[in-house]
Every structure is written in structure tokens, then in C-alpha cells.
Image (cartoon, rainbow, N blue to C red; front, side):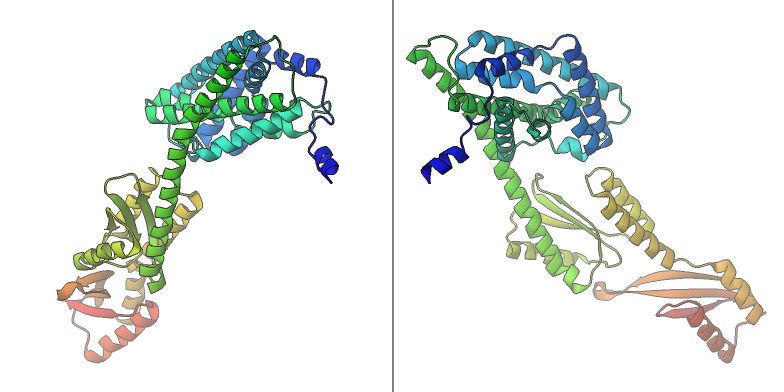
Length: 434
């Protein structure tokens, strides 16, 4: 059984010659001539993909990127203690990084579209999961590099261990003066580079590649200490970002539970919801299709937040008697947030339907009413909201008409019955204006 398991996980099966593998790795380090042109073109493609929020274009840029070469070479150099190779690999990686930042910064500087897209935002807050992706993706890539049959993993590794998009996002941050975006994206790029390199180092050690020269114990310890320090330098901020992401997701789940129990389950239609986790205090912002809330009700809901475990959080409700104004407010907020397009369109459609249901074709109603009641000279139909004591309210449909003389009781009732058939409204009131 032990022999079976040993053979099952034996990486020496199908392994290419060490010298040949090392030679291939060294050949992929240089960033001159064709490689530099390919890199610049890949950066532009990735920048366009981020600019138009196209995942497919970004994936294409990752596939043609030659950035993996010097990173893998750095891992090999550390594994075999070839410090000349390490210097060369790092020098070329630095050149590629600088060129990439310059090209992406220039692109985003001259691009007329500078809105923050979801693909850009996704690369500004790295966490522990990005480390796992980079490390295990790097393991797959290095194992494939050391095989006789290279197989299909290489393209997948290029996509999983994304190097181009973070660099382009860093360029976006520089071009738009948003240093937070630059730092977050560049840190993600560094994470990918370091942990692909560490994964390479681990595989080289596991496959027992011979050292280039005899290295004393002191230098071996220095390499191990250096690798450990770099790993910790990457891990600590990533754990912090991961914890922050976890708390933010918990907050969003709690908000959804609160909104569902207190509003949705009670028949209220929510057309807008936004949370501000990083603000002080945290905010929950809602808007409803037709429901209006008094200050007393709003205070009650804010007190209920404590029952749901919210601390230092306030609830605000966007209210407007003018539905068109509310629609414009929501659209302005949508333009500033990464809300799913289909969800936004659905909310806009609900508002438009609501607005349409509250408007009347006064000209058509007048023509038809004039034919039935010739004494009518003019009329107007509109919806009115009345507010009463104790913050109660009601909405009625009012028809105001002018005539040579007021309709008698029989004709007024006949007119009212006709209007109820014509206008499917719960409450209709007819008023004569002398």
C-alpha cells in the first residue's frame, strides 16, 4: 500500500532532464525585443479589458503575458543557490514591472473613460485567498514546467495567478491619482510574484535539483530566513484584509436579514439598498416604491438595529413625494456604486411603471367626458397625497372640472361611475370649479 501511494504522488515520474528544464527557464527570463513588445501589447489589452469591464479580454491578456518567466526563474535560482541567475531574473522582472506600469498609466491617462469598474475594484483589496491562489497556482505551473510533456496546465496557471490585471490597476491608480488603488493592486501583484516564486522554490527542493555551487550552512540559513521574512511580510497584511472582508460580508448578511424581516416580509417593495461599511458610523440606506415613513417610525427602526447585533450603525430612508425625483436620485447613486446592471434596470423599470400608473391622459378623458356631458368645458385628473395628524396619509385620485353649470346629483353619480370604469383607482373624487 505504501509503495502504491508513493508511486501515486511521485513527481519524478514524467520529469524532464534537470539541465534541460533549467535551460528552458533561463531562456524565458529576458525582456528585450519581441518579449518586451508582447508585454506592452498584453498590458494594453488588459487595460482595455479593465476599462470596459470585460472579463474575456482580461483573460486574453493573461494568456499572452510573458511575466511568469523571471518569477519562476527566481524560484529556481533560490532553490539551487544560483545568485547570478537570481540577480538576472529580478533585474528583468523589475524592468517588466516598470514598463508595465508606464504603459498602463499612459493608457488610463489618455483614456476618456475613467470610471471605476468592478474588475478594477476586485484587484484593490488582496487577502489570504489571493495568497492561496498564487501559491497553488504556482505549484501547478512549476510542476508543468518540469515535465517532459508540458500538458495543458500552463494557460490555466496564467489565468489563475493573474499578474497583468493588478499591474494595470496599479497604473489606473497612478493615472487617476487614487493612491489607495495603486497600493492595493501593487500589493496583490507582489503577492502573486512572491508566492509563485515560493512555490517554485518548494518544488525545486522537493525534486532535489543540484545546487550550482557548494554553499555553506550559513548562506543556506540566510536564504531560508530571507524567504521566511518575505512570506511573513506578505501574510500579515493579507490576513488583515481577509478578516476585514469576512466582517464586511457578515455585515451585509445581517443587513439582508434585517431588511427581509422588517420590510420585505411585511409587503414593502424596496427599490434601492446600499450599505456603507467603512463609514463612521456605518450606514444602511434604503428607498421604497410607495411607502412613506415618519420620523418616529425611522427612530424605532434605528433602535431595532441593536436587536440585530448592529453597533455604531444608522438607518436612513430616501423619501420623496416626487417619484421622478426619487428615480433620478437612485440613478445618481447607481452611477457611483458597483450595483449589478440587471438589478438596477429592474428597479428603474418598477419606478417607470409606477410613474406611468400615476399619470393620466387628460386630453382623451376630456374628449370622452365632453361627448357624454356636453356642459363640461375643461377638466384635469391627477393623484394627490394627503397628510393627516399622527403622521398618517392617504392617496386619492381627484378630477377637477369646469362647466357652464354644475352637474346635478344624478349626472354627477353617473359621471363618477363612468370614471371608476375608466380609471381603475380605489378612490376617485369629482370636484366642480365654478
